[in-house]
Image (cartoon, rainbow, N blue to C red; front, side, top):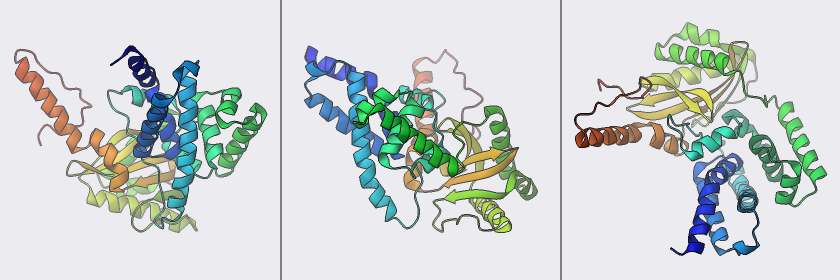
Length: 328
């Protein structure tokens, strides 16, 4: 590898985590985000970097523009999909990589990502860049090829649209949220129907990608029954319920035979569940299972076994939070 090629590679790798996080927030799919980042790498490799003063700014600009174009194409596909669409959840690792840390720094929850799909591609890009990546309006203007004043209006308009939809733009208190999610997990684990009943508000908003989509609530009793019925049905098909971190916030994973069968993202208010996103699609859960499911556990155990074989006199400490049933 020549010195110039090394500079190409090192500059890109230094920005890769940020680019992947940006593309994922724009598209709601890790696979699509990785495709965008690969496309940006090709453009970077072919570009005249002598004309590039700030590689990170250049790469961020190209990533945002490629993601906008890709989102326009995906919108047509998603609109034609009769079963509804949910973003692909990103499970946070116990030992986060650079990509994970970059995603956590972009404070956009999974529930908010779903509702970002209501925004136009340029609105979404401006909102994500400003709220998730702390870009100022001058930088957003350069990326979108608009004036700073126009970009300020775009972000303001996006916030108003999200707030009218009832979206909390700030993350909930992590301690209170953790308590609510733990109560949900406990009720699911013990199959406590009364406990579940006490967790839901009168009219929870429930969104799911299950084969028979859950409709938006039309009446208090019907809404509550839909939410409870969906969760109870999923719990009946799963072996256990575990707490996981989804896009930086605590949620519940329902596991069956060591694989994640469903992810539950919870929105709460005053100690009750007011919103529930249920992800069951094997395609959307594929990346989560690679990071957390049975394949990931097998890889961890294999690595631990190899380490123990190479250094038999050294003990290996396993954290109490390690998601492995030692008796299995």
